[in-house]
Length: 323
Image (tube, rainbow, N blue to C red; front, side, top):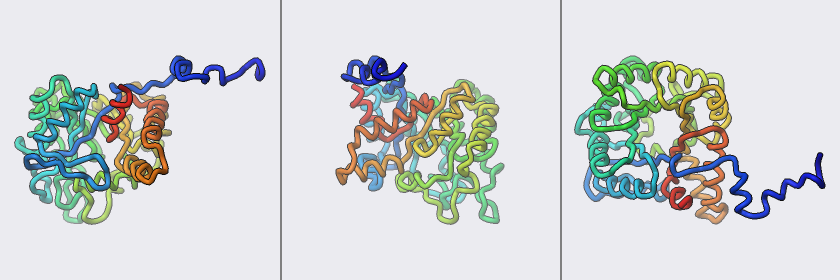
């Protein structure tokens, strides 16, 4: 049976009908707000390539987190810009480090806000790579694991609810899980950046986190465009103890999100990354796009593909829009 008996437009006549038959729903509960924290007091430094985002001192970060909690957003993820950088990323593991201090401040200032900490070395090394370099100038996977585990453990001690290794070292999820469990942090969640692609969409983030590699690139550890490889990475991370897995970026890899959703029955996150944010902002500023409408379309695409959790710089704007 087809037209004229079947008229698909019947259920599109008004917004109430459209809402009644909508199969995919975006909720404030799906959102995570990324934030950048740096040393100082009263600091709210604009990030030029990401309009509306800032590098925040801890006191300003706390104010932002209180507003985020008021909006009903369940979680933030913290990225740190340390006071000093060196070849070993030494400040990443300090109990008094920038992220560790921020975690304690946010947990003390909010009621139920979930704090996720990024676990990586790119913000802390003077060379900008996500791991320790060997004499040949290449990232030493196994030496890096010990530092990542120490970093994750310092975040857990500070009160992080979730640690999120984003480095793409082989074996890091199992190494971190073992370190956390041995130290008594069995309840700390691991959200693994499992399928993290070597993407051109990360540029503005590297400005925000001051983490651009000083030589070479990250293609030696971030992934090529292979779907099968991505799914194998996800499978390995789950086997090592990841509680939540992630595909990053979101927009260009929604096919990977869909395949991961169909294959694995674990919470699935996507990162609506800085380049996705910046290109929409730039077009909207020129009047070429309706920013709010485009954002909702992008985030619904992530939900339709199978994402449970969406990390996005639009989290606060979307929460206000959803009411």
